[in-house]
Length: 453
Image (cartoon, rainbow, N blue to C red; front, side, top):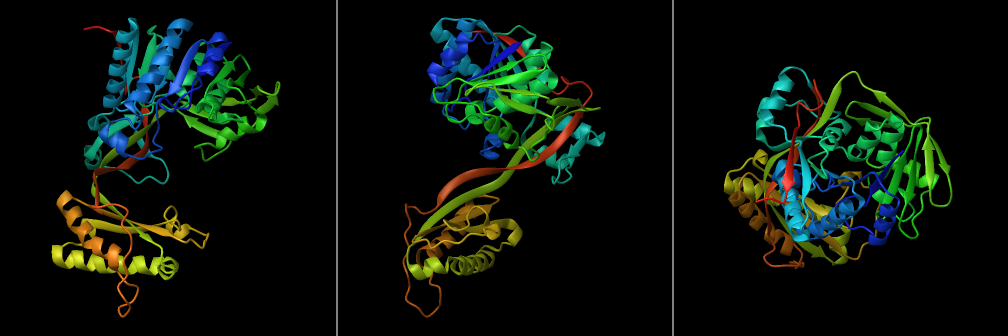
C-alpha cells in the first residue's frame, strides 16, 4: 500500500494545519502538492513568473518542509511557481534555500526542469513528432522562435526519476497535475488504473469532497484500488463527489490522457466505506504505443491598456450594445485616419460587464441591470500606439451620446487616469503533443544540497 498526503489543490491557496497533522499521523509515504496551472492565462508562462504571493508561498512551503522532516518522507511539488518555467522553478528553489537556512536544516533537493528550447521542438516538428491537439492550428519554426517560454508536461516517469535520486524535496517544472501523485504508487507496483484515477481525484485536494475548500486529503493505493479520505473537519468524500471529479478540467468523464497512455474509468465502481471515505475499483490504465508529452508555449502579443466606464442612465443601459458598437466604429475610423493604421495593426474591443462580457454573442440570458460597466481593451504592437488609441477612446467613453441630436451625457470613470496600462501581454500559441524516444530526453534533472554558500 502507498499513502499519498495532498495538503491542498495548489501551494499558495492555504491548507488546514489540523488536517495536515492528521495526515502526518496516518504515516504517509510521500507528500505531494501542485504548484499551479494555466487557469489564469498565458502571462505567467510568457514571463516565467508565479501568480501567487511570495510571502504566502514561503509560509505554506515552510510548513510542508517542516512536515516532511518530521515524517521522514519525500515532499514533491509539480508545476512550481504556477507556470513551471525554469525561472519559476529557480524562484521556488531560492525560497527553499531561505527556509532551510532559517530552520537550520539541510536537505537534498532534486530539481526537474521542463523547459523546451525552440530548436528542440523545431527538430521534432521537422521529424513529424509534433502533433496538434484539436483545434490547435499547425505551427512553424518561426512561431516557435517567437515563444518566450515553452514547457513540456512531465508525467509519472520523470517524477519517478526524481524520486529515485533519494531527494528529500523534489521541485518540478511543468507537470501534469496527476503525475506527482501517481508516480510513487506506480513505482511500488500498485494498480496502475487506480494510481492514475486516484491521482486525478486527488489533484486538487479536497475539491473531491463535500467541503472543497478544506484542502487536505489522504489517498491510499493498493493492488486493486484507491481510497480517498478527506482530513478536515466537516469534509467527507461521497461516491458523487469522487466520480464527479473526472469532469474537472476534462472533456471526457471516462477518459483521461496522460504521458504514456490513458486512464479509462468506464468500469470503475465507487463504494462508500463510511460517511467520510470512498474506495474505487475497476479503473483501467491503457498504455499507448508512443510516449508523448503535451507542450505549452506563450509568446508576446503586443501591449495593452484597459479603460472602464459605468453606465447608470436607464436608456444607455438598455441600449448598451448599440452605444458600444457606435463608439468602436467611430474610434476605429479616427485611429486609422489620424495614425495611418490598418485594422491588422491594433485591436479595439468594448465588453459590457454585467451583460455579456464573458460569452459575448454566445450569451443567452438577459437581465434588467440597473448599472453596467463597459470595459475597453486596446491592444497594439507598441506602447505608444496603445496610448494614442486609448486616449482617442477616452472621450467616447465619457461623453458619447446615443444619437447626434440629444444632449451630451456624462458617464463615470471609476479612476483617473482612465487608461490603465497593462504593458506587454502574452498569448498561448501551443496546444500540441511531442513524441519522445525516451521519457527523460526532454527533461533536465539535477540534485542540490541545500542550504549551501
